[in-house]
Amino acid sequence: MLAINWIASGERVSPCPACRAGGRKPHLLDTSFDVAGAARTVALLQCGDCGARYADPVIAVDYHDIDQDGMRYYVEQGAGIDVMLEPFALLDQRPVATYLEVGCSFGFAMAYARRALGWEVLGFDPGFVAAAGRRMLHLPIEPRLLDEEAVPEGGFDLVFCSEAIEHIAQPDPFIAILRHALNDRGVLLLTTPDGDAVTPDQRPELLLPVLSPSQHVILYNAGAIEALLRRHGFVDVRVRKNATQLQIVAARTPLGEPAAYFSRARYRAFLQDELAAHRDDTELTAGFGYRLLCEDVNAGSFESATATYQRLRDTYRTVYGYDIETADAVPLPASANLSLSQYGERLPFNLCGVWYCRGIIALLGDRDFAAAAGYFAAAMRVGGILRAILNAIGTDDISIANFCREAETARFSALAQSDPAEAVRALHALSQHTEGERARLQRRLFTDLANLGHLDVAEQVIAAYGPPIEQPIDVNNAPTAKAYGIYLLNHRRDPAIASEMLAGVRDVVLAELTAKPDDAGLVALLQETEIALLTALAFVGREKALAAIEDMALNRAGLDADAFAAHLQRVRLRAAELFTDLGYEAG
Image 1 (cartoon, one colour):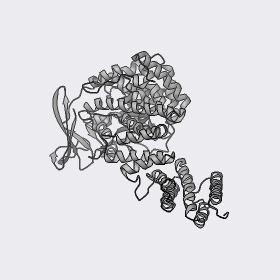
Image 2 (tube, helix red, strand yellow):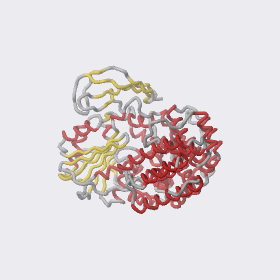
Image 3 (cartoon, helix red, strand yellow):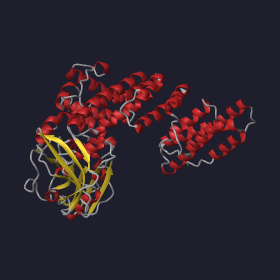
Image 4 (cartoon, one colour):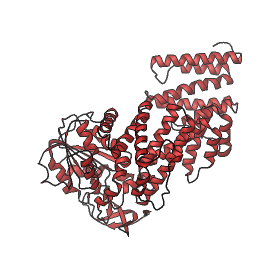
């Protein structure tokens, strides 16, 4: 079991493997874990010169054995193929014909480069997963480490090294080999965990994959990786931060404007092609089908998503003997003393994400809110089991953690529409949540209940937990503030306070729209808020409502002319209805 001990203050004398600086280094934390049944402790130090964090001591790891235990997990769930491919968008428009990938693992990026981009590809990786990828995807992967004798000098237009350099204890010889493989106008593309993400307040599901003690040797920050590359003659180095990852593009000649080597549409087409090409392989069907399902759901393509889900459902029924459509009938094991491979014998590794996507189809596509709530609950349960197993071996899965978090939020939204009273009971039943997480879910549930008109049930939430919103209003809590304004108007019958709340929401949204004028969600929130504000002000007084209409007619958000005209017409029609009902003269 992994344990992390943060060091409040301490130093060690140690040379930095990233920049070679000697001297005393701050001691950030210790990680304790088992290696081959023996307890080991490794310190994480930080170099004051370059900023890199690094392990002390370095422990040799047999990646072949590690890969063998987790191969199916990687193919079905663990490999973030889209995240792996996103750095392709950093490449400039210089032509690429020859592509080398070092540490290619299963070869998903190689397959994309070959199928979607038409490049000639070659990979190097001695691991078990790479051998499986070579066989299953029919890829030219050399089962060994790259050295200068293995490839011709200057033989490649692009060298890609994804999530590998952090495993290298001596980076200078490694970068020298990568540079040797590139031609004069060649480009080096890297990804690696961001060492700056290692902080005591980092969420565990993000921290553990970055640390990966016993595997990650050096954790670079942007400055450290740039200094390393410039030391080897790369004159143009660009670093982009993506969550807890660094994406780096480097060249010995100036880089130009980005090309379009990666897009969601191209990625989706790649998944469709690979799924069709490997129809008889259950593991690849599970891996490509699951990721295509996620793409379809994220795009709102529920008809296509349903077809992909049905294929996964049929595959899993054949492999496991049960129907994932009936979530309650799937036998979920306890995580205690269960290994990763034992989990895979019982359940698909991506079942959490599959059930989450099925819930979204039910929620937004079928409008079957009760069924959606059931799928979201099942996703949380199975995701929790797999995460516990991963945590026990010192890592986590960010994707599954996010699915669990989003499934819990979506479950409250589904319950708010199918069984509001049950939604409140579920809120009361929350356990092992931080105060911040509970407050977030409380705000979300209140917002949904108020927007749906379940104001008596929303009152129960306030009675138990207090007001859902406190000043100041910002763009993050603006939807809840709008819902609270509606509650104050329609349930508390306090139009004066409601109008103050809604005016505050409008001001925040207007300010945000100046920076994001095309944000459809913000535009919808502004329009909903203005209708609600007009309603509240009409109850305060006719002149207040008229002044608000005049201000709304200024289009201070700069909305599209046609859309604004339609919205202003709705505002004026609503004003006419209110004035008639309240006995005011027409404005």
